[in-house]
Length: 261
Picture 1 (cartoon, rainbow, N blue to C red):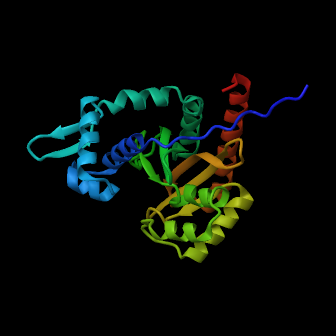
Picture 2 (picture 1 turned 120 degrees about the vertical axis):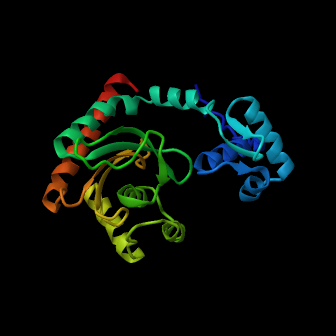
Picture 3 (picture 1 turned 180 degrees about the horizontal axis):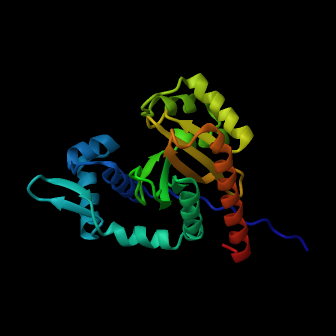
């Protein structure tokens, strides 16, 4: 009996949905409420189309409108959706106690990140250090996929186009920006040793160590990150920390296999 191959499915574009998502993401990134015209201009939308979408999102509680300033901001209606996503994220649930152990044992702030929207990593779990120094990081915080130690891993395992990589690199904001050639060498080093280090480039006086978490296609989909004061996190301590983080990653992977999640 001849078995027919599964039929290919074609993903149909739904512009209204794409525009609504783009509006929500833009408002979430914006530190201030935004008017219709600036929002439409930034997203290359027709102002009337932008306004219609905003009104629907407002009716659904996902966007809030200030009638005095005529500006929009992301609404609290997004919170139950975000909370449900985090609660149902098995990776977040499994890794949380392990992050607490890393913070306790090494005196670092430990976070887990996940690729979300294109070019962005989002914090899905975290544990603060018990030391006086604490980096302000919140669940749901997002940052460019190419920044800091995690960015070197993203470039090492996910990026392929050199010109796109350099374009993205030049848009990053660092306290002490590395030269692109120097950064590319650090990307190659990260690919070889399986973890990456940022020593004061992203944030002055702060060392960031990151370990990749791979998907079934071999690309990095998440990362485990440790953040500490450079004076405390000396060079000889970094390999030991990275090994502990890799053990956490492997432990979580085994647990996911056992639970089928």
